[in-house]
Amino acid sequence: MAADRFSTAARLKAIGHEAQARVYRAANRPPRPLRRSRLTGRAALLALVLCALVVALAYPMRQYIAQRSDIADQRREAQQAQRKVEQLREEKARWQDPEYVRTQAREHLHYVLPGETGFEVPSPAPSGTADQAGGRHPVNDAAAHRPWYDNLFDGVDQADTDAAAPAARR
Picture 1 (cartoon, rainbow, N blue to C red):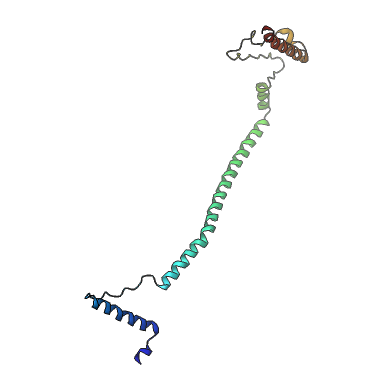
Picture 2: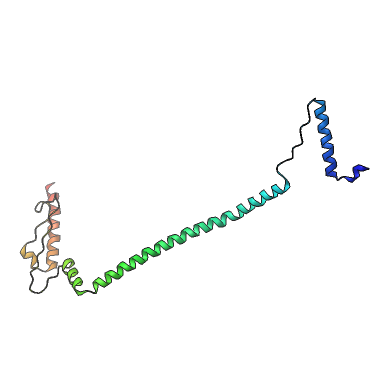
């Protein structure tokens, strides 16, 4: 009746030790000491909880990192916009200066002040274009003093005759 005092697990353990000893005695080998498994129930539960935490926190951490990156991008864009605003304010302040406006009008619109004589230097023709043979004609004084629409219609007529000339040669 002494066996009733032990729990079932203890009895099974004792039976296992006895069976192991019999096997080793039959093989004429000394019995090995019983090794316990390193993975206990608590360790398995701890590993399971850790895996669950990693899985549960992976997506929120990814979102957090992505949002931090977006915030950094937005801050960079805001700084660039601020620099652009400062440049535009400086330009606006320059345009408030009448001397700057006068300089820009003279440079871009070719304005001249009363009493000045304006000169415009024509840029050289691109290479490979002939003034007479290529259909481009130099501007003469008569064309400069006629109304613009006369010059337009003369240009259309000239283009028409230039286009008809190669067809007549065929």
